[in-house]
Image (cartoon, rainbow, N blue to C red; front, side):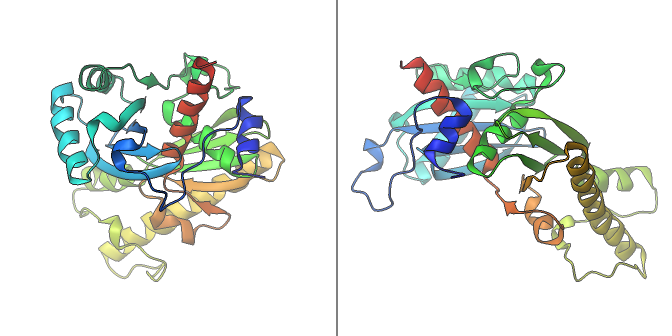
Length: 295
């Protein structure tokens, strides 16, 4: 039942949400009604275009609070033209940002260049439709709310591990509510911290990490690679075990985030690798909001 419209209906208590159209359906890009999804993280911002739950295009740029709405418009127009996506096909937008300083420019991008107001995912505003059962719901980040919505496509309860600037562990209960979690330093933060704080240690590139690397390093670089890679695996496996014990309930464990591909196959206990989980959660939230506002 997980992933079905009925499953998400139970979570959001709204009519069944739209599923992606079958590939090959005779419909031109100009005829599609598309959703612009902006996921602004601390390091990178991912912008994608969805038709229903079908991702049509995705682009990534460095997060920069100095960029204006016009800067974003030029960048986005270039990429959309290369993907043959007409701007007038964009009929909705949803923004989730963990960088408050970036939000005004993205809001202005939508209102000025597309002529409508975007949905902003905000812990202070329950319009997102996800129950947030923590001490201070307004502190829940847009990414954690979106991950909770995206987890509704899997059996609940669930744990979402998001490998980003920070590595977050989000817990979603059987009702689809976000009930808290943990925050640990991200992989690249750990790499940078070693390089910046230790005069004789080089900067390591995580892209080369794999399970064939020796656990015992015979030189400085190998020792750093082993400590960072296997140490991080142990951190994540340890948190899976501890959070599972704390809840006392078996959970579906889902890995997402920009660096999740490096670790998913090496970490014991991960059930699913879902690189688009946050984006899909944002789409589901927008569909929930649209259903409520069109009644």
